[in-house]
Length: 215
Length: 218
Image 1 (cartoon, rainbow over the protein chains, first blue to last red):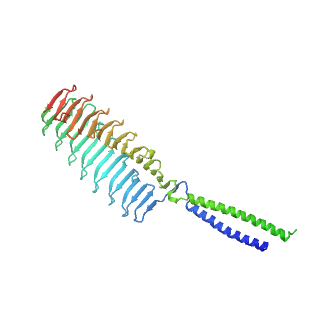
Image 2: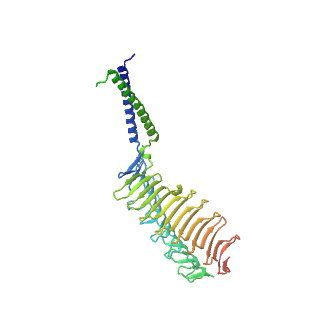
Image 3: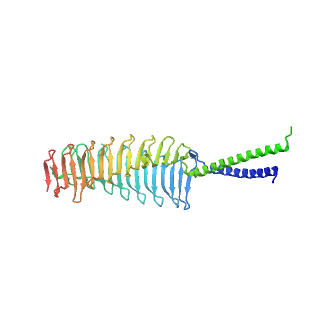
């Protein structure tokens, strides 16, 4: 039978082992808590970059979020552009901007570009905040436009390769009108309301002489 | 007085028993804390709080559970994410903080693009209606529709030009049998018609305000 000092010695040794094990557990808990601690918010002045093995990455800066593909081309951006204007830009695999949704001098603008970088479609508000849709050809010449005239009336215009108006369809509060012009800009056919208040149609020659009119 | 050996052993035994009890209790507490940490641990990047990058000029970009929000020194300027009623959108705001442009999905999922003037009035929109039909509208300063391109209820494409009271004054449309151009006066009487008539005939006519044909061909 063991004496009391021997029993106490055994129990103290067991306590010492237990204490070391518990200390290890507590230390582990502290390390785990520190590693996974969540703060209410994470704030930094340095960019935050998330990168994958291919090299593609997304970078969050104070200006916004930019996403780059593996070749380093920026493919998407949401934020403030170099002029401090809000912008959402989408670029193709060559890095060329193909679509931009932004404020141009504070005015809303959606622009689409072809592979050559030419503006081909724009939906925007003008400097006077009137709505405008503009379709352009490969030479970036306006060929079709929907817009408001200076008097605020709606107009649809069709343009030649020289960007000169060839036909337009519009209305004021009195009557609508459709006008067709030749290459010199001379009206050749008019249909609808005239400035004198009458409504009809006419055909003219290149010298603006009326060849036919009704009624 | 010096305690006897027996009394010292008994006291030591009692203290060791106390230590053993505390050790068991502390182990239970430590294991409980470990279990709690393991159960609630998260990777640092997936936390619920926003991640914010700040610029020296006071601008900032923040990623929250709703998306990306970019601010200049004083106002929200860009939001891209999922906003009110779980609708995804990209919104752009002017320097006063007023929304000027939004590309979004409506609650029913229909896509839309809207542009607003400096007074907050809707001036241009490109949207799909509930049935999926596209429509482009341009509005006057009081949000009155002045110009519309759309595919209507019957599936027909149409271009409208409207008066300031939103009455359609002229429109060009087409069905599978032929197109037609219609011009109306301020009283909505048809004054000019050109194209295919509902009778199947083709031609054009000019009418007076009483709907009497003044000229017609053929």
